[in-house]
Length: 265
Image 1: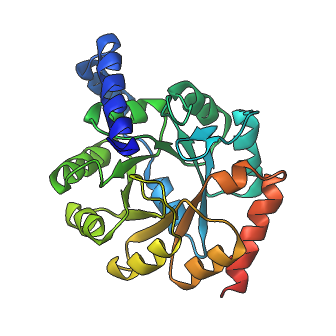
Image 2: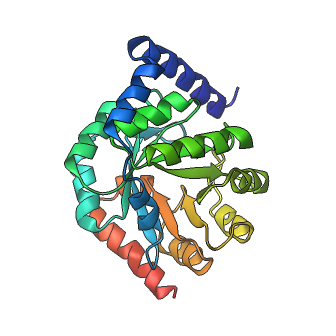
């Protein structure tokens, strides 16, 4: 069993446990009462001229273990907002990434930037949860969901007013995301089955995605040279976690990365 299989299995267990407390029927009723979210703003933030930055808040990962022994997540989110991030990603997976819904909710109450709930979506229940947590966007991973299920979840996101970032790692998954109707496609440079990283994965797969579709490069970005290569290749946005989480001065680091995209023009 790969780590991705384990993450998915644990996500199903979490959903089952959460449903014991709050039924799907209850979540649907609460979402109906809350009305549609304003998730379109996440999508629009990714379409701004130049490179958009999704800055990630995470304490740990399966591949690197503890990334941030000290984890003042509200201060980190404030740093990102002050540094000019276009959006914030927050992990809610608790076992391997040490995230939580509570961390997401507290950050949501602290900053006004668009936010994506970063988790391993295996049930529509999690999409309703995301809406009630104040998310603007959810992550749908092609390696976990077939094309029909992705399409179904995209329709649900539209109903709830959420954006969706559909994540792929190879050409087959890109084709699945396109067939499902994804408006934003993220290419994960990290193979979730063995955690090897190759930034060129985004560069190779870019040509398979229509320029009108938002294209996001995720994971493994190490610095300015990567940023220049991605910008030249027509990448619309990057999702960066570890590089910023380990930076002593996040505002300075983000400014440096932005500058590299301008040099790459």
